[in-house]
Image (cartoon, rainbow, N blue to C red; front, side):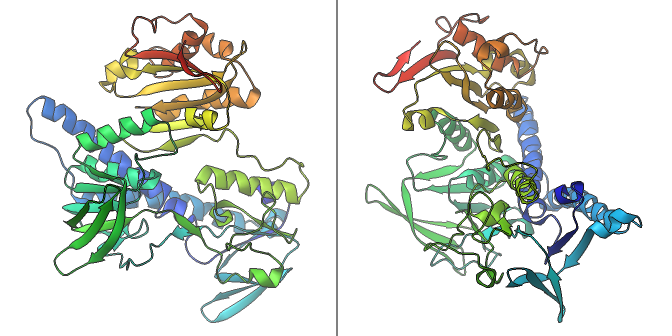
Length: 476
């Protein structure tokens, strides 16, 4: 679409379904599941508080809702492409949609095969956006019936009575949240590290872990998976802990959530002069491969596998190819969201990032229990944390939001970071009331000493800290 904006002729080749993982077994599918499970969990919190019987959805009802969401998005994409391709004006010749498996013949042509026929397409430039697939675990046989990946999990026929999830990163924790929210599945989560979500600050991962355990999730911390297999009576796995203990557990299903691998096989990249390093990864300068006419974007790059980043990379590649600008690819200040319990959103650096880079900083943190909107929603588990430079200007370095509507609260801060604005601008904004974003404003006010509630009084719910490389953490 960006190339069409610039008046270029485009051929779009896809071997499978338009929209790929972003629609069918990735972001849209899993987030629809999360939304449904979240509503079930929220309803049951209210019902339990009033001594009422728990509410539940059948897997058939869940699947129907997910499939309806996927169809809406697929229909939007498909109709859009068809209408562009069917135009009769001059612009109609700008776009061609080709189905099939493409592979490079040489540096200037690909061959697309489908149903025994082959079509040769020549072009001045190519963009490889072939996505990724779930990474396999050596020694574990995936059958997508009882031992599943994130591709197969959507094809189950009923909620399992029990499931073990291998991997406590974002995807693993999201599925642990989804299954525990529905309330019909005993969830086990295997975590090799001392805590889940190890890339996040400890207060974030600790709150998520507490809420998962409150819903009955068993988190196997510092556990090494020695064996996992589908046997006639159960899926059985064996763990060895760091203290030498061993534990064998039976479950109905297993989900492998250990990352994704880029789809680079059978593309004929070597015939096009695209080089890989000794670890099998593409040699890239931004999105540009070792052949300057071939760019790579999205999951195929092998890192930062998020939909919004993939879109950004695609736009960037087209604009660099056609000399719209000469800016380097930049992933700084990317906003992220994790669909957990509670929701987690972030932008920029967290505290452990700052310390790893020896960046002096100040932080302000306020609990949701201090926010009128959170109290009204009856969802007071969560907090905002604002991280700024340790100087007079206090420019924003990053923010973490944990709780209801977390993702809605970070984008203004992301814009401030992009423009290099200080927190006094944030503190002076007029926020709607009652709103979750008032918590962001209160963090800014805490740092400049003008907050409504004072952290020295409510220090169990509000806190200001500072950290310098030579001094460690100090209360502000």
